[in-house]
Image (cartoon, rainbow, N blue to C red; front, side, top):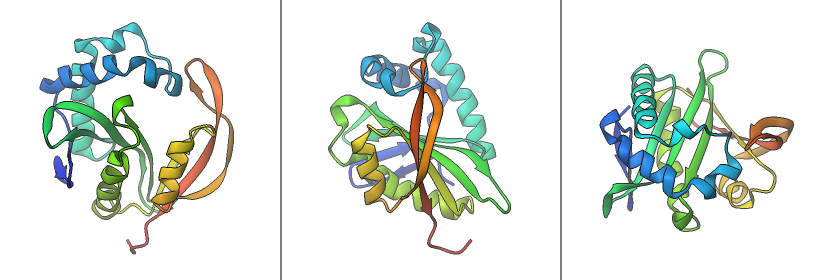
Length: 184
């Protein structure tokens, strides 16, 4: 598995701790856009030190293939993070599955960037890590994300009541699953 992949318009990169400023800038710029859809963040989250430490942990997890976060950058603007894709909860053996999460900055939504990133990364994750099943949990009101998952051939599997604490409240989610068409 590589640290960097490219698409027509994007660079998908595992960032090291020295790039904490790029990540912090992404979160600060998009704080009020992202917070309604994410777990509550402490004030410490919005510091260089926190992001530096977090990138260190993420990089080590990438080496072990236990947690993989690719940061999305535009090819024509490599010093600005526009979003992220994360593969977590890796299960091996008979389960061969993981969870996916993703986000884009407000000004980059609706331009096909996330579909481009996921179209590149999903087959790589499936092949390189022998993943058969990828699960995505989406809040019912997140229509753009639901539409994206449908375009990527995820299947709606069910309703998860009070699944995750988002912005201080327990929220329902819909479970979508991508099944790897290639044998592993």
